[in-house]
Image (tube, rainbow over all chains, first blue to last red; front, side):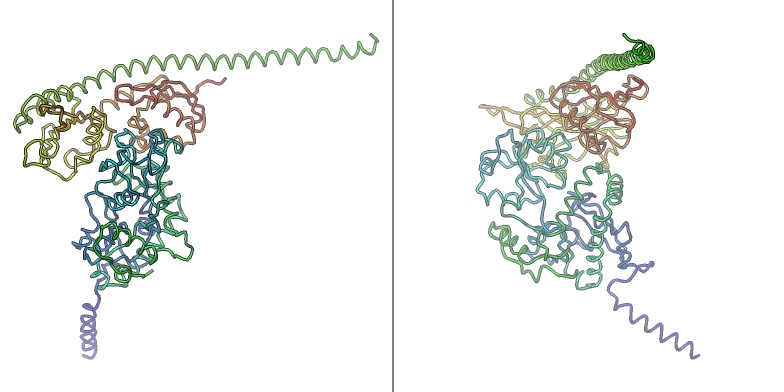
Length: 327
Length: 306
């Protein structure tokens, strides 16, 4: 009888505990979460893939599904609709959305700067920004438009703008004189298409007064409020995944290329290796005082001022509202 | 000459003769080795040139006949009406009557088909032995910004687009390349760009043709696109993943990059690219396909001991 009473009290106690847990563990004791990168599988997201592959997420109590990104999978929309728990996207995207009123949080700034740049063929006679005037300049239709058009506006460049879906072929076929690209992706593809580095001039945005951080980790405020501990674990596991990826580059490249192959994304070791090397440069800030995954206020203010001055945002979201340092 | 000197000469002379004879024999052997290698190289170069010349001529003919399809259609569209039924009739005529054609699209500029329709790009393609139309007003792929539409529009001339894996729901996994031709209308004062005719070609037939090109047993042929992307190779991991330039880095064969660059300039050549398989020297005879700027590379290992 006494045992029965004990059991009843125990059961009642357990029932009381259940509503207190915002995210119940799955049968395997892990919290199931989904993340969406801004693009298709590639070494740009190596840290997350390795955190999953090497069970680092599991060590932190998380069962993570990494969904395939791409043009048709918008990170912000997926976060707003509750389709994913976390997203990986550019800092400028996060700030613009926050300024629009979207209750979005940056919970980790992984890439301390961005690889965005303009590239021109030397034989087109383009050696300096002044040579951009009157030329055909290719920019992505729906990616980094604020940065590319803002760059041209900032430097008072008047040219014909050609929005495209992909940078490489338009440039190789000379449909544009100048194109935007990422140093970790399209630039290497250009070299792997037979263009020699000494045949092109590169204009990295960071060398022209636009040194903005790149990819960061995002969630909605509701997700953070509901389970801050889960968010913290996700950020810490992700950063550990990056550290592992850089320390085990060969293994990482094997994993990345295998994932790309399954996703029907063209892949080779040379390109993935190049991208991973560039990621290592970007994950670590040139300022030794900036720790891994941290969004510095000065970097944030620099970007917000650029977006505000160029009228891409109508108000300046506060740093303390936008960024949660939970490393 | 003293007795002593005669004795020395008698002892040394046989040795000297043996050394000289050995040296002559060695030199002859080396000469023959070099000569053999030289004649082998000449023979392979000659044979490879004949082989690739024939194949390039054959491929060119097929490519030119494919190019004629959208070119003819562009003349028709420039001088005829563009009602929905008429457009569909033209698409069906092309796709149903040309075995190499996988699908055809007639894509219009915004409001060029009618004043109320921004996107209008009817596409007819083959699927499981039947013919299927996609939604002509579908805007999801933003076709105005796609390579196959944008490049010929800007350049104002027909363009071969880099081949790609199409993994769409509609078509399954298939390797396609697109030949795009702009078409115009006349507004009384001049030409006005109206849209693009895009013909999708499956590359299966070309891959099969290229895989049959050999000189000796272990030789093989690569088909590469204008950007050097490998389109056909006996190594299943290379097509669409590697280019001759990425392979040059991965296999540490810098001369392969030079071959790719020379091919892009429209040149042919015969070059020792080094130890492709880490064991033997490999020679490559390369030849461009002028019509679409692709290229063939016939790779041959050195098979004799020189």
